[in-house]
Each structure stands twice: as structure tokens, then as C-alpha cells.
Length: 324
Image 1 (spheres, one colour):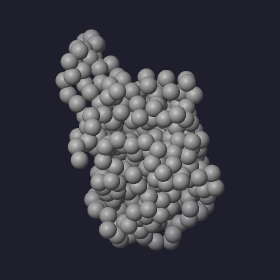
Image 2: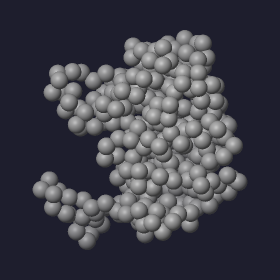
Image 3: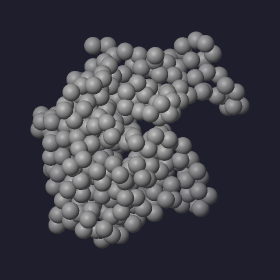
């Protein structure tokens, strides 16, 4: 199946390039509310599923034991910029759980934020693992290992108790047989299982269950602290600040997932060529077309469905727009 075009890039009035993809929207009754393209072929959701990787820490009682706050839970679900506030909160999680940076197994890279990178360079410092965009998630995983009373060494390995807990969550929420699901290693070294967009959207729909207190904590934390989910000038943060009733999370290679708690809907989108720019405008348009928003919210989402493109002199040269 060839997926439809979900976004076009215009230079002037001419389509210069196009992005194909697929998306699914599923409700709590497991019904498909909206869809486009192939939603049954497994794809790697990548970092879009960090909420599910955080759930074992909450469901096990570890988050309560270590007295984590909403800001810290949000960072556990983030792909952050490595800005000072993100590093501060990651340190706080580690400290509360009695862990330290030396236990990280996510690898070091320069902060995703250019300003944060420039600051390190000005200070003559090297990036540390805590600057990794997944350091919040890994702090949560280290806290879970401590709470479970198991050694944290190799916590990123698929056979480790921490990753087995994550696998159980994914199987339960997304209703996939993890044992049979294709498995790959993510950029931060943890396992990532491929699932159909249909099942991924179903998992996010289940986060809307008002009886699920663990899921409610994650949704509340993310929507209360959208800066912790991504950071300055990031799509996730900006759209949640603009539409507070939405929970959305990016994943590498053109993935966006999330849920609309007041409507009981989960959604998942994948841009075939892995382009985040295509996925951003496309997911905004797909969400705007759902009949669950106020007129103001709908217009805000439509504003995110098109972005002006400028050159190095800040001259408008075109735009990227979701396919109508």
C-alpha cells in the first residue's frame, strides 16, 4: 500500500517536495475514529512512547516512594533540549532515587538546544549523559531499578527487569504480542518494539481512562509542564502550550503520538521518509479535523498545520503545509 501525501513543501507556488505517511485515531472502545494510509504495518514509535516507559515507575509505587513531582514525571516522558532547566530536573530525579550520573547508559551528546550547546562551548565543558535528550527517561528507569531492588547495571538491555516491565506495559496497553514484535535498539540504547499505528493509537487512547490514576498523573504532568516535554521552540511544547487539552509527543523518524483526554481519543502518525517537518504540520491538520475542539482550539491547530519557510536573509520563500 502506498501511503497518501500528508504534507507538501512549496517554493513559491510550486510543490518542491512531498511527504507521505499514515495516521490513526482510536477511541476507548477500540474503534477507529479516523485514519489515512497503512495503519497495520508495524513501525517503530521511537521516543513517542515514553509515557509507557514511565508508567512502570508510577504503577510500581516508585514515583510515590521517591516523592517525584509533576515536573519530574514530565521529564521522564520527554525528549528534551538539554537546557538548564531540563538538566536541573534530571538531577533532582537522580538525587531523590539515590542514583547518580555515572549510572546512566544513554550516552552523551551535545544538547539539542543550540543555545545550551553554545553555553557549554563558552564554558569549555564537554556534554555529559545528563544532556542527552532521553536523560529524564533514563533517570526514571534508574529510579525504577532502585525501587524494584535490582541492580541498575545493563538496565537498557532487553532482558533486564526494567525493560521487561516496559514490555509488559506495551503489551497490555497496545494489545500487541511483544514476544513476536520486531525489536530494535533506540538512539539512547533501550529496546524499541515495532507496532502498527492502530495499536499505538489504541495504547494512547487507554491513557484517557479516568479510572487509571497512573496514566492521569502522566497526562497532568505533561500538560502542566509542556516545557519539560521538549523545550524552547519545540513543536510538542508550543502546541501543548497553545492547546492545553492536548497531550502530544514526538518520536524520531517522523512519528507523533498522543491523546485527547477529554474526548477519550488516542492518535499515532508516521511520516514515511522520517521528516519531522512533514509530521508536524500533518499531525496538526489531522487533529484539527477531529470534531472535539472549540472553534478557537481548532483554529490554533490549523495555524500549526502550515509553516512559512524563510531563507538565511529571513525572506519568505515558501511554506510547508499539510495536504488538504
